[in-house]
Amino acid sequence: MSQTFLPGEVLAMTAQAADRLLKLDSGDAALLYLRLLRCGNTEGLKWTDARFQSALEQLKSQGLAPELPAAPPEPPVQEEPPPDYSTEDITQALADNASTFPALAGEVERRLGKRLSTADLKSLYTLYDHLALPAEVILMLVGWCIEEVARKYGPGRKPFLSQIRKEGFIWARRGVDTMERAEEHIEKLTRLRGRETEVLCLLDISPRPLVQREKDYIAAWDDMGFEDEAIRMAYERTVLKKQSMDWGYMNGILRRWHEKGLHTAAAVRAGDRDLRPVRAGGGQKAAPPPSPGQEQRAREDMERMRRLMEQMKQEGS
Image (cartoon, rainbow, N blue to C red; front, side, top):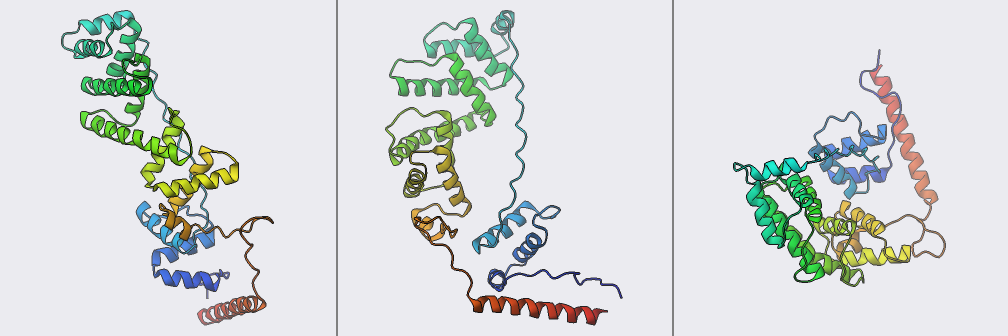
């Protein structure tokens, strides 16, 4: 009689793993664990992302989730290069009474306090025509850039149109294309500006203008919801390991804590227990080898499982 449901080989798990699965009392978590134990991956698993993530988080909470291979990065979106506008294009745009561009150009000139050159007008028209940003959004962008330059370099300093154009592309990539989104974006940038100063103090760095990469790191940590003391702990671990500040290394620490749901110093102290052995001289001790009694119980568990499978196979034949 052919086998219809019995496996052809034994798939064993430790008693500790079984106890933790039973503690979860979750069918999805158990199914996902068996899938990973049997196949080593989740290919072909026809679950919704929400169902998969829920089961995975439950396994992680019990230390049962193996490291999954990272998904291949999505190919970067190729931005269409802006047109090389001619002087004639700009002249026609300024003469178009049905367009809001002439009024926009006049208002930008007033705010910057200078006559816009042809190159300036081409940069402005790139935002208006190529990126299709509404005139009111462009004016909010210009206002933000004016405020930022004055804050960094002193009152009276104004941004170049090339700087405004660069920031405009960032806004467009983030979908800031309405007044409502622009207001939300500026509110977030304003809050992050204060947060950047606070984080620099936590990292023992004197206040200074940040490069974009540093801004991105701090914005990501803010989105993850880390409190100050947790950020300071990550900084101290980074310096201890690297002997100096390393933004990428510190970001790796915080991302690992974020994946574990550890966002406060208390949670990190309670939940970030790296049990891997370290070299002599390190602060952590290697995990002790299993005792003879533990090894004997493991062998007995395997033998009971083998006999049970043999009995089931005989009953089904």
